[in-house]
Amino acid sequence: MRHILAASRLFDGTTLHDNAALVIEHDRIAAILPEAEAPAPTERVDGIIAPGFLDLQANGGGGLMVDGTTDVAALRAICQAHRGLGTAGILPTLITDTPDATARVIEAGIEAARQQVPGFLGLHLEGPHLDPRRKGAHDAALIRPMSDSDLNRLCQAARQLPSLMVTLAPEAAHRDQIAALRAAGAVVSLGHSDCTLDQAEQTFAAGATCATHLFNAMSQMDHRQPGLVSAVLSGEAHAGLIADGIHVHPAIIRVALRARPQGLFLVSDCMAFAGTGLTQMDLGGRRVQRQDGRLTLADGTLAGADLTLAQAVRRIAALPEAGLARALAMASSEPARALRRQADLGILRPGIRAELTLLDQDLTAARLWTAPDQRNQSRKVSSTSA
Image (cartoon, rainbow, N blue to C red; front, side):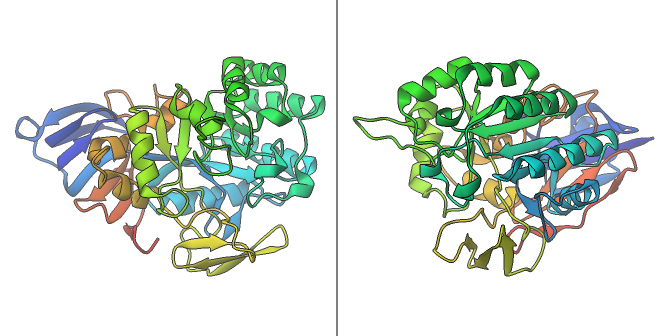
């Protein structure tokens, strides 16, 4: 079974091609050709073909949060909600919770992987091993240092899940614990931390390779006391970025893009609101309000983002430091590199399974195209209303 997709622009994960065609045999990419040299297209996309977008920080979607009640059905529904927004794969993200809740989510994630739930890339456990001084919307009563039992649970999960990202603060975990997590296959990401530059660099040297929502809930770039932000901008760690225009000012995003030509990737940091018209939800007994593109607790604390990756790509593409190709990479090949899965995710090349994000020319809408059934599997959704 052959399918030919043609478009005025095609991004393969590295390079933006003009007037190109993607040849798909069964469920695999067979070739990328100039449109003039390809067979007549089965479908011509009025816009851009890109690798399936990847979101490494998605706290929920479709009206559901990742929490202690999450089971395989909930993970399936959350993944499907994001696929309906044009994102091929996510790391469902559990924020700081109890050991029992963490264990239940890990169990559900392992079963989701066994069932090959579409769009399930693994899990992101954001906490509870954080610094309460930088708790953000996390429940300070549940934040605690990493114990031996915590470490064992996380290492076992890393060995059983397709991917496991663990956000922690250097203040709450020893460097040998971080080294053990890395050895087990986890991606250790620093966040919700008030660490110094030296502490951050020592933790990266121990095995951490990423930072969570750069600039938010972390020590900043003071000219005499540089913190975690400085370690990221002056180093080589990957870092997620919430490009909603609220969590990080566009001028600061431009600084980060100049400082780091590679390594930054986009995250939605979305909540249960994603893919719904909900205006409020419950977060551990606290009310989260959705208004004017902002999610806040009663005291005004930001509680996640009202954002899709397509919206974030549009904002980044408009910046002179980025442009379209880099913006698309930040939603596809860059997060794949952060997960150490660049061989099978975030790229278009022969042999790769064809799962594509298709965007309108003006980047206001995105949809998912999935093999092997050769049909568009997700409805088209406006990124301005998602």
